[in-house]
Image (cartoon, rainbow, N blue to C red; front, side, top):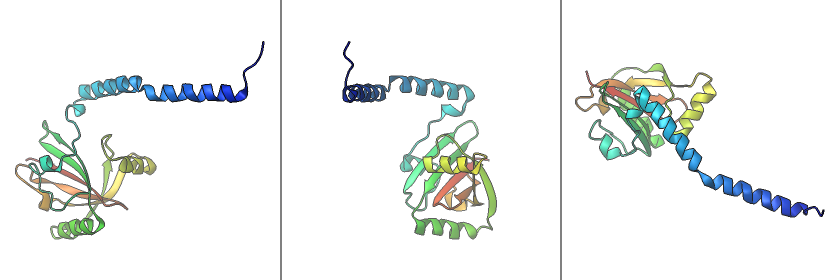
Length: 166
């Protein structure tokens, strides 16, 4: 029996790997399963959004965000948004927030819908938390969301805005 040349075996192997990578069907099924599991816990009932205009109906966004993702939790009358501003605008957000009081050290839990950079930063911390400085979020309040804070994530231009209704 004649054996196949090594080049042919390698080519067949690479083709098989490429076809397997393109399938994607199982990945989608797993995503649905994860989503269903999240729905059972109640968190998945709200979907992370990226529309700044829709967010602007709930809270004020005083500067143009370069990146935004947010969720509204109806049960708790709460909004959590992750915003990344330009370095100049990030400094303005902090300067304005300092007018309402000093900063406090904050550890925020990393959410699965946060941007990848923040998820990675949380994983590197060892406790799946993001460290930052928290400020009063007065410049972001829009009724009924009039309680909350904005936290600048350490060594980034990302902010996590958490506001709720009384």
